[in-house]
Image (cartoon, rainbow, N blue to C red; front, side, top):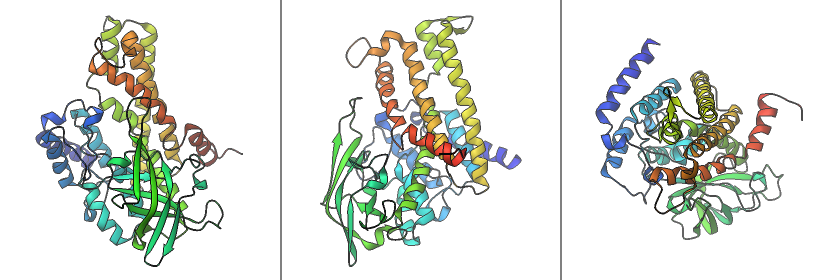
Length: 396
């Protein structure tokens, strides 16, 4: 524990000295940094902060140092996260390369694949998107039809993916493809890495209820993929797909903490601003109970995340418990925006125009966006099934 305390002090000192003041402010969604060749910078401090954190490997703190990571233990990484939140430091980099593909390459990729892709993910040089879901293969993902035919030194890929988040801004896509159509549904699937610059790859954004277009459908027409871009064994991609989903759910499991950190004003202060306060407490008792209930659940959840970090320290993989983290974080995030919207009252009804602050408009749109949390990364119903069968061992 003394070593962890020393690491905390050193980390706090480094963050205080190196995180630019502009990167200790509220981070609007449009200023999130995902990297890649199409990256744009709203302010120079974003790039400076990314470069400093990447140089320490702290954009991917638990990855091995030989691939550009920080080499931290899971407990040390949690300390880093806590200290960044305490100081209000923005995450320097986000993306599927960090939370999903990177861990899979560390476990299943070849040494050549790790050295080719992981360092560029750490530095933000490359941005990845996910090619899993299809128009008729969502929750029943194993029904996917995108086909990859091995032709000598390359695969020829044809198909149609949907809900490929930020595909129009990404450089590469990790993709599930069917390589043996005669095999059983969960077999004959392979995991490929595909360059989005191939002329046969065409992403098309989908407009959402929030007014944003972060999701895309992606068309793959006669795309040539080098054979060496196959991750793992041919026709054994379903095992990799399931592991990646565990990492995805674990990543989504942190949305409650990230959402809390995105607002400078604590939830109780937002509530006091709109409904007033009595003796330092939120004036409306029902809203006060709603906010207090969320805070207690969030605190318990963060303690559970710490226990999971200790288990990971002992070498435990994400496993089916990731479904619990994903489900609970989803509910926490949705509950957070329900409370914020309740606090704002009629000011939470704004969509655009005068009479509403930027924060009010942002909260309304993110309240709508939070509803998708219970669908993306596997629906809440799927997570509850996993928890029932693989965590609680309940009978079918």
